Amino acid sequence: MSFPKSFLWGSATSAYQVEGNNRFSDWWHWEIKNKKEQSGRACDFWNQYPIYIDYLKQGRQNAFRLSLEWARINPEKNIWNEKALRHYLKIIEELKKNKIEPIITLWHFTLPEWLAQKDGWLNKDSLKHWQDYIEKIKEYFGQEIRYWLTLNEPSIYLYKGYLEGNWPPGKKIALFKALRIRRKLIQAHQLAYQILKTKQNQISLALNLSFDEPGFKFYPLGNLLVKIFQNYTDWGVLAELKNKELLDFIGINYYFHNLIKINPLISRKKNKIFSDLGWEIYPQGIAKVAEQVYRLAKKPILITENGLADKKDEKRPKFIQDHILGLDQAMKQGVPIIGYLHWSLIDNFEWALGKEPRFGLLEMDYEKITAKPRQSFWFYKKIVESYTERV
Ligand code: BGC
View (cartoon, protein in one colour):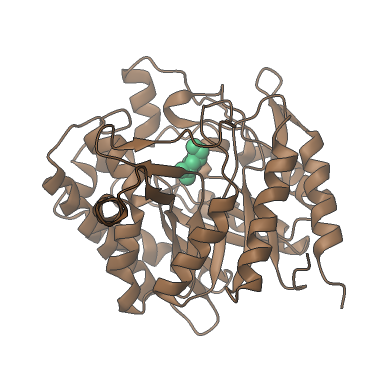
């Protein structure tokens, strides 16, 4: 295997899951209201970022995905927290000083509580509020950032928050109404793209794209079912966006292999190798998804997330190796892949599942709020060193 020198090797996080003390976010209030495990200080990334960035450096990672917390920047309607904005600038500077490319997500599932209280994305002015936020981001970071991701996984958010109801705002609404919010999120992407686009930067969003195939042998019907199913996932978001020239590359979060059937609709048990969360490990799928995306969109691909919950770190090294092998295969088929970001750098707050699932290359001690490398952290470093072309 050999990857170009410019290949982005790194890992990914999101603000709410690692920073700690995001008291103005809807999730913070949701945890309290529903007596859920609290994110609390999480990984204390907000204060300890120099330590984490030093780990990135030690691990030879040259890229890092992090998000900005809208609620921290805009804690109340029309109020902007300049101190927080400057703090984010410091984090970005620290990354750059260490030759680590910051890849910034603008919205990773959480909303300011003041907006959530007024129906969140359903509010008639939500796009206007989003626009204000993006303008502020442009003012502070417009010249600093090469890679932007506007949104993270719109369809997962809709499913969890509006159909299953297990995440804020905890609603169970009709599918057609959820699709209206999806339209809005797509508009939010377009708006952010138009505001932030320069000749120097690359803008996309992170889509949760699974490898889906028919779960039974009658393929014409099976393939049709897969198409219908995908339309309601981030594959559908991609289909809506790809003709609009508002994507400079495609961000793929790859986690799942789905067998689509009639009843139950999805099953995930072909390989019988699972993560701690019972998610099937299916590295073959990453090349297939990358190839399908490239065929559809003809844009470079960045793997914006890929990882597993594996507390004992028994499966993670092979998991990383096999998925990177998949990327190598896709590249040999002519698919331009510009980078791989492992989810996650650190064990973190896994939304409704709290702190139990362990996705990190670094292991978190939540009592002491300190982190230490797992074996796979060093393994990943070796991969980066041995597979990157030197000249
Ligand atoms: C999300 C992350 C989450 C990860 C593992 C992704 O879908 O973007 O926030 O922690 O999956 O569940």
